[in-house]
Length: 405
Image (tube, rainbow, N blue to C red; front, side):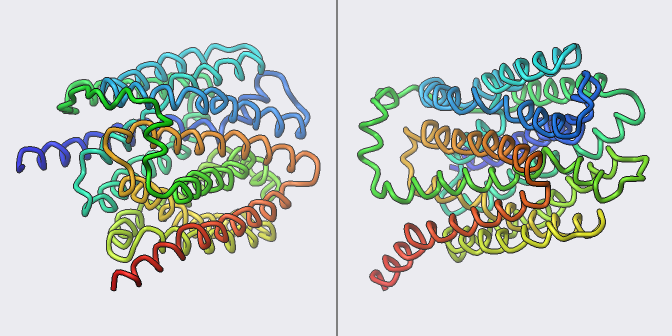
């Protein structure tokens, strides 16, 4: 027992480092993507907004389809092989991204990226299946700080590299970070995995055996809306910063600081919120975080300077830092181990679909109705999601707990 405990704790910290390196690489993309699109030949601001959304969201088109396939393979052959596949594959694609010569090539390479990615989702599945139930919230919250820390550092590093070297060289640095995640996983992650017969059951059979389908649907929907909320804004933040500070000579760096502000708060709060989730219930944390996030998106439309935007993004980071680990905790607590890869992969598909639709939606709204209106639409969607969670999860779990007492 002690040995098993040592293994999951060791894997947690190795996956933390791998998630940090992966997120530090991938989070550099959003702030510099509009600049890269412009470097590849586009000059109109509306076109840059739309194509930045396409390029950013392109990776998720194939993620949505590929994620369940990787989830099934993870249930059959183990989670560590998925970490190795994703990290090495993404390193190669990021290297190729440095050499594209047109925006369509950039979109195509981003689509290939989506088909082979998934390091962080693989790490979540590995830790969720190895961690004791009573430690799930803390472990998944702690793991999330790895990706949040990388997401915090990435935009700052990306903005610095663009000013010091070049956009193309930044993609080579990203590839090196993914190779770091690959070697960490190869050398240090331990998984005692034996394929089981029930792992190859049809998913429909496993799905019908789950106790509360409405809970799973609600968690998938929440993951979708959380990512849609984040990524309807992120691909156009650079343009919004330009609107707020038109005379700045450090656009990439300022944009990186705005991106980083939400990462700082999530980093500080995620482990504590994970423990809170273990103590009072993940459903309560999710519901409260959705309401807080919905409220905080509204004033972002009215900010007058970059620092006001940064402060509000800091608050949004607290809400999102609470939501995603708590969603994973809910799934962990209600999913049999033999189906974990497929259930978590469906949740990842919902996440990727939210990224894609959010990226496209944000770019389209910004181009046709103005950047400020993106925040109003995003807030309304989070309020709708909060109502769904309240009806299908919050009331049911509280009623069940009251009946037991």
